[in-house]
Length: 180
Ligand SMILES: *[C@@H]1O[C@H](CO)[C@@H](O)[C@H](O)[C@H]1NC(C)=O
Ligand SMILES: *[C@@H]1O[C@H](CO)[C@@H](O)[C@H](O)[C@H]1NC(C)=O
Image (tube, rainbow, N blue to C red; front, side, top):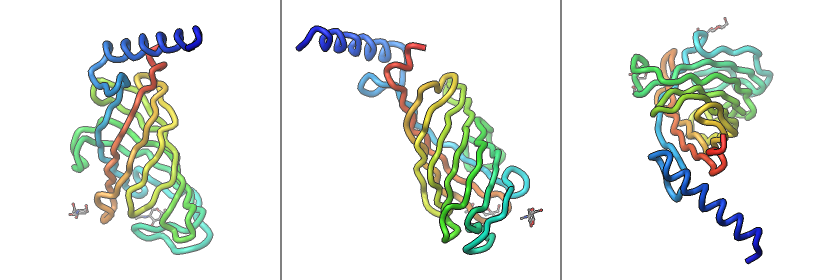
């Protein structure tokens, strides 16, 4: 083993030890956090169609025409009940990208204050209106700086003016996030 490799192994060892000793959510020396929240979207109140789409099925409970630009700022609560404690906000946009009217590309900034962690994560990915969708986490701010992982969005209730999704968070901090 070359000296530089030895040195690198030592640094990694020190890093993983540091990660273990500074927080309580760890697996294999890496910090992670797993939890679920509920996103509530009320049409024309927290979510709006900004630009109408051009083709495919029309607007229904689950479809929007191809090219529809949608913007939202939705509360995230602890339980499926809209009146339960709000611990976050999801703000972003989606564009209907499936000619079936069921799929879109979404980008969102999710601001959180949960489990003694405050800050935001940013996610991007494809969303299916009636099936669970995984969105990769592309980064974060404050306590979520450098965070990686994914969120899974699953429809809970799509009837009525307010639709509800369960958002499962699977967040992982890389070793270098300790260097802030
Ligand atoms: C939302 O607002 C748009 C534009 O004003 C309107 O056409 C649509 O019917 C509204 N939808 C609901 C469910 O209120
Ligand atoms: C879904 O939401 C509608 C409208 O708020 C409500 O009437 C219905 O009971 C809800 N369904 C479930 C399964 O919670």
